[in-house]
Every structure is written in structure tokens, then in C-alpha cells.
Image (tube, rainbow, N blue to C red; front, side, top):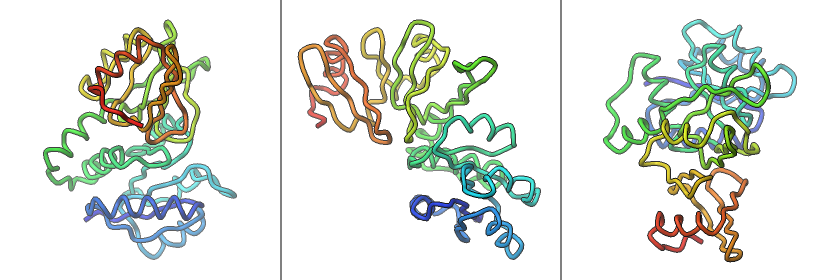
Length: 251
């Protein structure tokens, strides 16, 4: 069984990740440390197969640990900032996770880690479907000139079209990001069974809906598990939402 070290200055974040990994039962957590120096000391005694690394930590930033890791140790970034996704792949990370870590998204990461270490076990049918659904990766231009953003479909909660651009809300605490990609382009690349089109301007992941607030005839507010950001839709989109949810109350 692959072994892991959790490196995060927030004990609560490490505790949650440890619980989620224990639920999988496919990666053994050797320990959790709160700084780069503690990680170096730990690894001197016992080398893990994978390090789950928080990028933003006081003192030495998480990235400084990369050059001090044994060559055989893989890395998975764990961060509240989705813009580190590009850096993760530039530095050869197996995957990245956005806080708060979503269990289904973690399942995808675990499969990738197992493949990278050469000891993947056949997943259950349901897990295999969810992993396949979350495996689509988009590398797209951002609003900032010359920059690109890496987005996993498994992290997307909703998308709001704005002509040739769109606002994308991901699992985590970050605000929706503006990217140069139309809603039609998103729709072609996303797993059809996981997303629903609400009118001309919105794509949502229905299974992550947490609360629907019908504020008026022309305004409905949607909240989603995994983010504090809400999405406001109009009358036509709300009518389509009722069809998608089969008229069942969601909050």
C-alpha cells in the first residue's frame, strides 16, 4: 500500500484529509507535519511514496520542499488557490486538490497517484465512473495575458457564459474565475451526464446543488456544496432547473 505524508500548516486541513484518505483505505498516512523543515526531518527518518503538500505556508513556501524530496517520492498539491494548478504540473506533481477537498475529486487523485506509482488496483464500478467523469482536464487562456489555467471537470460547480468568456466556480473558497472560453466550448468538453444546461447562459452540476432560493419571478439563487459562492439565474433558467431536478425541493 502506498504511504503518504501530509504537509500543511493548518492541523484541521490535515485532519480532514487524513479522514478522507482513511475512507479510501488505499493510502497509508504515515504522519502530518506543519512546515517544510518538519517535513524534511520526517522524511530523513521515513520516506513516503507521496507527499500531499500545501503550497502556501508561513516561512518556507511549500514549493521549496520540492527540491529536497527524494526522486522516488511523488507530490500532490493541496491548496486553496486554484491558480497553483499550472505550477503543479510544471513542477511534475501527480495532481492537485483544491481546499476544502472534495471526496469525489480526491478519489480521482488517488487513482492518478496509484497509476504513477505503478500499483493501481481495479476500482469499483461506481468509483470508476466517477473517476472517469472527473478526469477531463482543460488548459485554457486566463484573463491575464500569457497565462493559462488548468481546470479539472471534477472541480467545476457551475459556469456562467459571457460571450467568448465565462465565469467558472470551482470547489474551494476562491472566487469564480474569468476565463477565455465560451459556454458552448465548455459544453462540448464536459461529461454530459454530470452537467445540465440552464438556458443560454449557465451550466451547473446538479448533484452538487445545496440550496435553491426562489427570490422572485425573475430571480433564483443557487448554492452549491463545496463553495460559498452563489449563482443567480433568471426565470427561463429556473424553469429549466425545475425540469432537471424533477420538481423536487432542494432547499
